[in-house]
Image: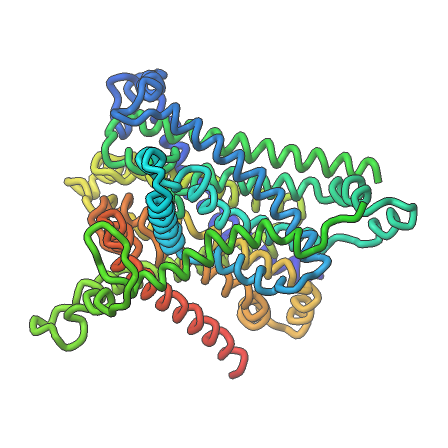
Length: 295
Length: 291
């Protein structure tokens, strides 16, 4: 071990400096806009700070140009929650299925991996195309059936909870699946065997043995689901329909808004992400401690 | 009560991938051969989209200049190569530090979490947060001028190739670091002790033991970074001030002009290029083992 210790002490300091610089590089800019979002009313996009105020937050909630920020926030929150719930549920179910094994499990695995690494613009374009064709088919069917009133009021199938939701799931589900793989690879089947030996039904085993043990990881899957959806742009861009999510609005605003309001919006959005991350990390830690106390 | 059979449990996830990934992908392939109409999508078969994509690329150009498509790919590949190299070096160094030099598991977890948290926050916000630092009147320019190092603000810090590469590294190093860290944590520590006992220097152990054993992690990280950069249009757009071309941006612009068949042909070519890079990378890493 003497050799290990000697090497550690030699490389440690320069490597620690690199690591510290990287963390500064990672967080420095975001901290900057957080500070600048509290600019005084006279202040601009850069330092120096001209006073300290909540002026730009007030401006933000009055609305930025034509964009209704409040509505965009509500839409993104709602979509994020739906994506979170579906990602957790579908990943858990698929995780259980992969454990038992089924025909085509290899195909599903590689499809998920392909979905993860596929350039997002291609998926977005494809979903956009598909829903346009769906619309064409529906319109011609309505025409064929002679339902002119329905035809006139029909606009598109594309939307937040159809194409948008699907686009988000192609991004969050692969992460959920990989986490479930990591979890079940380390899962000791002895716990389930013990439950079965005691006469527990498969459902009881799942509910009272498996779920409490994997609970912290499921919280992690949910957190991936929400945060990835909350910030998603690339896959939504061509597949969201008429209304935009918050990050899409934000992307548009980067070229038009030239006041610290954009920093106020950026800081608020980041705070939501951080709250979710810390809540999830806290909940997972708590569940782990409880499981540990029981065992 | 019996639980559902396995294939039914896998059905929801499989269904989502079928409807929102496999079918759209096949459709992109099909539409790339459809004729370009004004505003409607009409099935058909034509190679026109590919022909117009490579218009003047092969031999036809007298001016000696590259065609737009080649120029765009070259620019995107340049970003891709640079970002891949930088994220690989930084990501590997960070992973190596946390995996082998941070002594306790608790400290490892804390540092690793601190380095991954930004991954769960918004990319666009992380991009615009460079404005107060790199802008014309930003902190860097103010500092340089105060120190007397320059007398006029440096213009290429923001909305430039430099800014694009910086943002890519800022956003994507995590994708490289995490898989490499994962590989490193799986390395049997006794192998490193054995190298030590045989008199290997730290560098020799790093190069001959750790790097080959991180092969999978490096490959996964590289695939992530390469596909993210090759298909990007958001980072190049925001950090390049909407002035720099990229393949992803071309597809996005064509889509917004409803030139779907052309955008689809572009997407097919992009996918082909990305797959070629991945295959080549895989071979390259394998080759090292065979030598």
